[in-house]
Image (cartoon, rainbow, N blue to C red; front, side, top):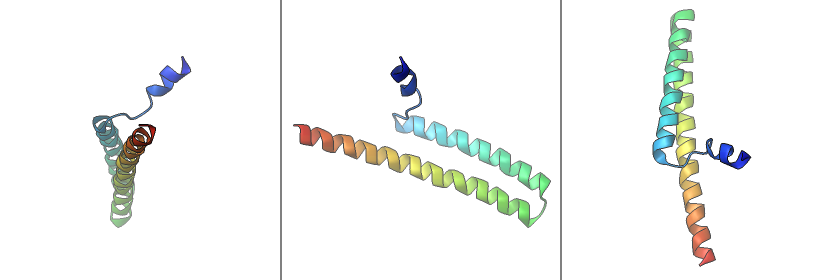
Length: 81
């Protein structure tokens, strides 16, 4: 039963990955907007940039991990055959 629940939290397709990245980007831009209001001028802009840059890095890592996982499964199938 726990395995079935754990499978809900595994990213299986690129569509799911892009949906997660989109949700992260929405949260980062909202947080960046708060930074701009709380810290006017260049400090707020710098924090806004940092919060959105984190999403770019996380998104790239998610997509790379999916690529490596797909390649590892393909290699395992070749070795198994």
